[in-house]
Structure formats: C-alpha cells, structure tokens
Image 1 (tube, rainbow, N blue to C red):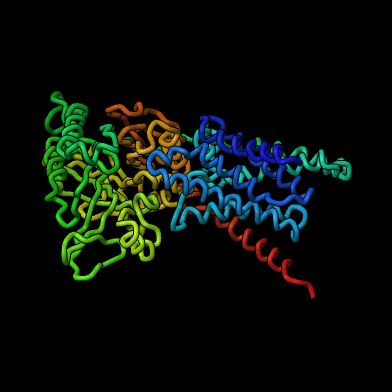
Image 2 (image 1 turned 120 degrees about the horizontal axis):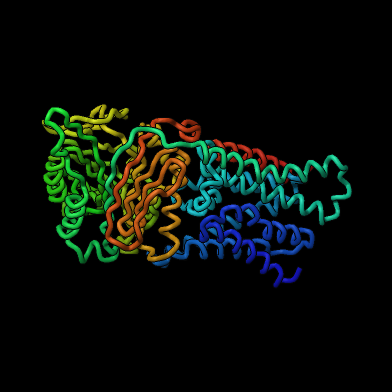
Length: 565
C-alpha cells in the first residue's frame, strides 16, 4: 500500500470520527468510524510496513483538532497540547494492539483493543488531567433517541456499542473479502450475517421503546433561569459587580410572578417554591470567612424578602483566608505576611434574608485554567519559573447538594409536598435537594450520578462557557447535559452566562432554550424525580468490566512475550 493511500485511510477515519460531534443526529456514523483505521492496520500488518503509529497519531490528531479546535480560542498553548497529547494516547492504544497481534491470535487482539480503549476512557474520568470530551459514547449526545439505554450503562455503554459494531463489521468484511469466507459452513455464514444486524437494530429498538414509554415523573417546580450575557473576556475587568447585580435584579423583578393572587382569600394562600438560577462565576470576591457580609449576598438576600417563596442559586468565585506563618498548602497564595488564601469555583443557594445559605465548591476542575495538576511539584515550578500563572482552585473531595428552600415567612405555606433529601446546614426536610453541577462537571456522568445518590431531584447546570466563542464547543457542552438527563432520569435546568440556557426533560429532550449571546430569561416547570436508575445505583459497570478484561488480556500478552525455555 502506497503512502498516499495510507494517508487517505487515516484521513477517512478522522472525518468519520468527527462528524457525530459536529452534526446533530449523526451519532450512528461512529459505528463505522474506525473501519478505515482498522483496515489500514490490517494491511500494514500483512505487508509488514513500519510506522503505523504515525498514521494513527495523524488520524487521531485530526479528529481532536477538527472537533475541539475551539479550545485554542481560550488557551492556544493548552489547546494544542491537549489535542496532540490526547491523540498520542489514542494512537498508543492502537500501537499496543498492533504489537499484540504478534503474540495473540484470532479475535484476542481485537478484544484487547476494545477493552484497552474502554479501560482508558474509564481511567480518564478520574485521572489528574482529565479530558473525557471525546469519549466515544459522547458522540450520541446529538442523537439522544438512539441511546435511551444509557440509564442502564452510562455513556461508556455507547463506547462499547461503537467498538462491538466496528469490530463485528470489520470481521465480516475481512472474512468476506479476505479469502476466509469460503471456509465457513452455511450455518456459520448465516450466524455472522444475522448477528451483525442485531448488534445495530436491538440497541436502537430498545432505545425507541424507552423513548416512547419514559414519562416525566415527579412533582413540578417552577424555575426562572437568568442569562445575563456578559462577555467573559470583559466580565471581570470592564463590568463592576454592582452593574452585573443590577442586571440580575432587574430580570428577577420583571419576570418573577406575583407571590399572591389578590383574589385569593387570606386563609387559602398557598405558595409553591420557585428556584432562580444564575450562571457560573456570576459574582466574584466572595470570601468564605465573611459570607453573609458580602455585598452581593446581602443585596439578593434583601431582594428575596419580597419573594419569600424564591431561592437563588448562583455561581461565585470564592476565596478563603488562612492565617499561617508558613504556606499552609501547595495551592495557597500569599495575601500578605502571615495571611494566605485559597480559591474555589463555587455555587451557593440562599433565601430571603440569607437565613438559609449553603455552598458547594466545584470538584471536577479544568486542568491548568482552574487547577494545577500535581500542585506540590508543578506549583513550585509555576512560582519559580512561570511566575504564578497557573490557576490553583481547589474543590471539595465529594459532591454535596444545594437546596430550593421551602417558602418562608409568616404567610408562606408550601403548596406541594416534596420528598426532601439529606439536610444541609440551615436546610429542612421539606427543602428540595438539587445537584449544583458547575460547567466542566457536566461531562462526568459517574460523578453527576453521585448527586442523585445523595438525593438530588433536579440537575442544575451553571456555566460560563463563552470563552470558546461561537464554535461547536458550547453546543457540544449543552448536548452532554442531555446525556446526564438520560443517565439519571432527572430534568436539567441549565443557566449559561451567554447561552445556550435550557430546560431538558428526563428523556434528554431540549424542551425550551434561549439564543446564544443574548440577554434573556427562561421560565418554565421541571419535574422532581426521586427514582434511581440502574446506572445511578450501580455506576459504570461497563468501564469496570472492560478494565478487568483488559488486565487479563494484558497479562496473557505479557506471559506470551516471555522467552520459551
């Protein structure tokens, strides 16, 4: 095979892998996306040609940059490094598969390839430098009706489907056109021709049944979503916090319905709670040591006195002062002698007068732009060589809930009965537990399910993702929230600073949304579900099983590499 043809096959896989992430409704293309690369590896093995790794790295590099080029809009160096580094890991997996064929025979190398890739995706979710954006199962985010069974398997179930069908079709084509088809008897041929369509049609049929039978469950909650639309590159420097607060205050006052209907008698008043969402990092300079004294908290706590049935959940850049003669941690930065601070990307919920106030610190942080991987090692390098440019946010070790508080005040009674979750400080059993998912966290399905295990009845995603500009990035990010809705069967209320803000139902449908880069308010009802899906209860079984299978096959390969006596 000539080099030009090798390049064409590598390019073909790159294009096929990219299409589902860029074109809505094309997720099933991923089921054949690896065929060109598998064929290229097969031919290079037969012809004993070297440098397969370079072709694989080229193919995966193109895929990474075609689909996630927008990362460079926020950080050029980080985008280039992420693209090449992620592609290098993918190519390395294919190279190990290529090498394994010298000692493993039959279908074993292909099982090794699929198991190794799935194990890598599983590990990638919890690695110190996670970037699971291009997990294969995410390709169906824009084809949500095809993967309703994610409520059982999670997103890695989609990755498994991709590998099973790609390898099954490749095996059939290789047998048919590689000369071995004639050696199969009639029953074997019939089985091969029957199984492959079933691998395609059965998951689609199951998903279609779930799509038509899954109904919205739970009581309704009214939600008001703010989209203040501040340019993220200007928000922190050119707009004062008072100006930003004025926009949100006006949106609340102009759109929140009246508390009481004047026609209703005094004794019959019933007030149902309302949740107001404001986006990630809406407010800054929030010091945890003096939370209630913060001017933004004070302003909205006062505003909510006019709406005792409302809870505000908003994002905040928060900080914590630490008194210490020496540096208290690798992530702490100096304020002045004897005083240090640590930073967080946070969400907080508060009610009228801030009588009830809870805070959650984002746990899944974006490497480099929010956190420094291996801070003990790289933090010193950053201080001494780079001048302290790397971000050092710290997150909490495990998820926790925020609450839509039950209406308070002398005339406020709850009009709906809700099942409360674990009570936080200042919350009661009648408060509604919600998941405060901050931006990047929404692509971590196994992490988001932990909120539901704690009792979350609604997923609230708050984000400020316009750093990438008008590119596929923010649309992909929105679609990943749809996957979380299916996995957990929870409605999603999504507040994005510049859009797209949306309501997503328990089937992953976007039922209402705002335009991008527009100041807007979105108001609607969500359902509060308490049922736990199989995925919520048991987690990522596919990833765990694939990791176990990979380790077994790796051990077999290593044993066969040992010299024979």
